[in-house]
Image (cartoon, rainbow, N blue to C red; front, side, top):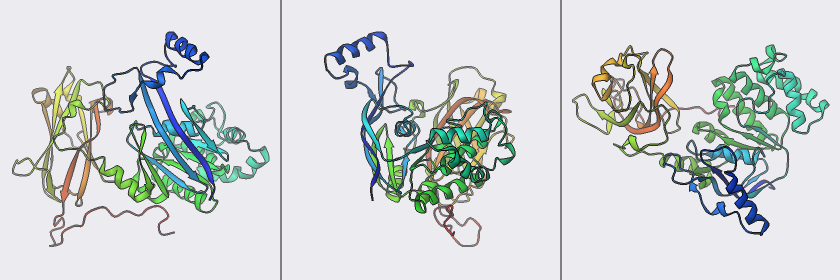
Length: 426
């Protein structure tokens, strides 16, 4: 099978804190080295792309030494933590930006869906944007017209197809953008995490279309997602990115397992040292602890048993504690949100936190199957609107749920969750 895309020694460097290549002195220095036939002096410096670490240098390597090939008809998954370099790599592959070092070789047309409404003109209607995108892909008007009805039907936006795109919701823009990219017959389809914006019905529909594109039509798909179930269902091979470099490449199951194993978090991790967080920092999570019904700190809880989660805090500025909103989400090994506990929905008043450094969440019955779960935490300063992040940390802790007699029938539940992947029984 022929190679349709090849990435050779791809490196991408950015200067932190500024827009552009750097200061005038840096640009002059680069020019002086270039006219003397010497290498750019700033390619020898730069920190690795670790978003959890504090910046110690002016330059950062968003990507470092990326090499891979993609065969015609292959569905290649690209996974990694936020900030690992996935979107940067796709932008380079799509020619949106160029690499600092390295080359991309392709043998066909590339259609990209990198961000909501990428390539759409907000003042043009949906119909006009279909023709605009087709022209960008090098298609003739007659070819676009032949696909028009199919695109509109797939997008589900027929009612609004002659309405300016600026009036579309983000989900509608994604629907139309994906329909255009998938139906105008590119040789390589590049899809970023934007499908997460669409509803469940459309995500299933989009994944089915990508399967048809690769299996039936023999075209190539590059797919970035945090949805491990979708990656397992769709991809034939997966690249794992870590700090801007390839840490693993191989069959889908092996790559996903490698990635998830490396997501593990140590118990009692000092969250105050985590830099990969959002929020104004007025209050910050510092630790997550788990206690059983006897008030004993534990690492494991039996399925269906009570558990109390202690969220320890660091206070750095005054806030209106009566308006605080806290959310605790449990994610499975595929990074799918299984259950969320939200203080406003539970009728909790966090005014007491003004006199305490701990938020306590009591769960009388932990209705989770036996497995290991990740905990994501969020704290907002306006519970009514859930706006204004004070602190947000993904994968703040891991938590083990042991098998138990959840239904009190003498049968212990099995590990894992039952899942049907799109198209499995078609």
